[in-house]
Length: 156
Image (cartoon, rainbow, N blue to C red):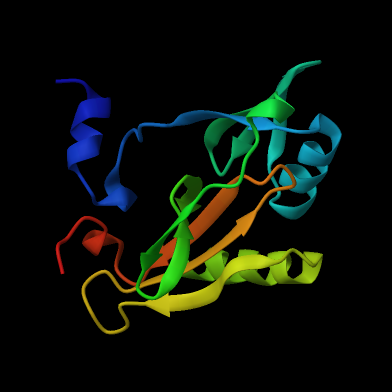
């Protein structure tokens, strides 16, 4: 069994030897405004780039923005705990203090939240902070944090 497979079964993040990384490709309307948003607001680092796409270091994971305006659309939403959550979205789970810092940075940038920063399942298994907003191309992003990361996959 490889270290990567073992790490997926070991939720104790502090003791992981290797963490599996994800890659996500998504459409954008304009590469310059995408760079401004992902670097300027979210603090991502630019990786490889081409006239039709750009890679970002998205909190240690690789995301690729592909210039494809005709593929950009706003995702429909489902009701989750009384909030309209975009069905198609991506994001990361941060430590609580990092999540709070990012929420303040996003607020300060003037971006409109789809769902304002708040806590769900307060005092229960899976207590988490979450917020949603869209990038300039309409892609929905969610940023989460957990009081106890060990409860990430635990049923309520």
